[in-house]
Image (cartoon, rainbow, N blue to C red; front, side, top):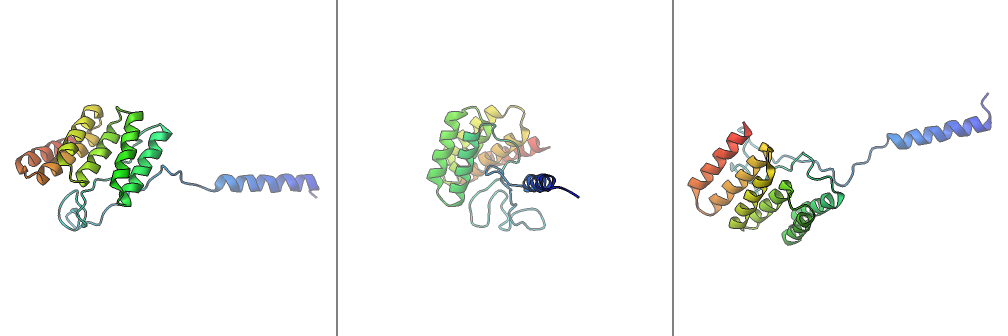
Length: 174
């Protein structure tokens, strides 16, 4: 027979193990949901990097953007604000994050994407170039930035420049 203290110990142990088994997702963990696409891999509207609603989008990076919790919180806030159509607030959050980590290439890329969706094409190109300068050996990030540049150039009426940017992105993705 187990005495009362043994029963109390086992109950406490089971409650402790039950608490360890529950999984919580931290607020900074985001799941990227791919946009609906056709059989050829293009979005339903046929334009790569552009959703059916017309907003130009890129996949959310699955790499670690920062080890700084304040930067992660600001990036999360910017993504929530962007999703809610609060692009000015999103831009402010990204700019605050960049004041904390001015050499973070992913933050510059996020801001470039945001400016692209806001129709600020020249600024999007400039910010994407800045991101490329900090991306060093991250070929995936460099390719994403060249796609931002290509989309901005299309919007500016520069198809030759856009084609060049998309070729650079394709080379980096190999």
